[in-house]
Length: 182
Image (tube, rainbow, N blue to C red; front, top):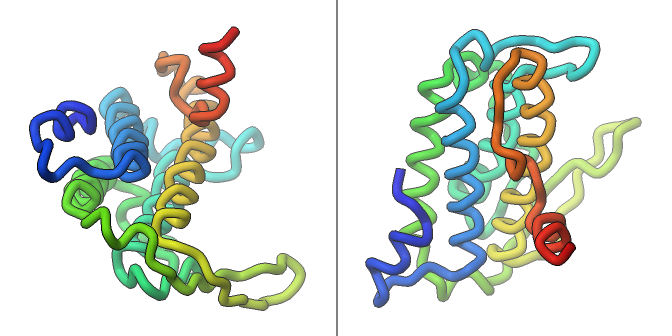
């Protein structure tokens, strides 16, 4: 995987926006985390502590990025790949992360501020989807922060398996800023 900061420095005429670099950094964190796991770790169910495997958590946040990539002007977060092989296969997850990183590296900065329609379910008690307005940059930010949230849960599962991880894995950017200031 390309390092986001190294890539940006080597391509000054194609420097990705900071938001995009943040997304790539998040994807890199996920990839490095997967490098520390076995296939058994990836599919382990740590119930009752966490109801989903690491693979299911990864499929979920990868789905958000794929929804954005698939249709960047009408993002449908209701499209999910539950039961997809990425939930069970560590190597597929790593490949998807590489593909998404490459897509982000080449995403034109000029489209980040463009308006997009976002469709998502908004109620737990009944099925009700709502379409709201946003920007591509806002939705990329959401996908990266949501991935970090799932990293924190995956970190719990990994710790129950005895996997030692970097303390910053699963920490949100604003939390990291706060911690640096202490």
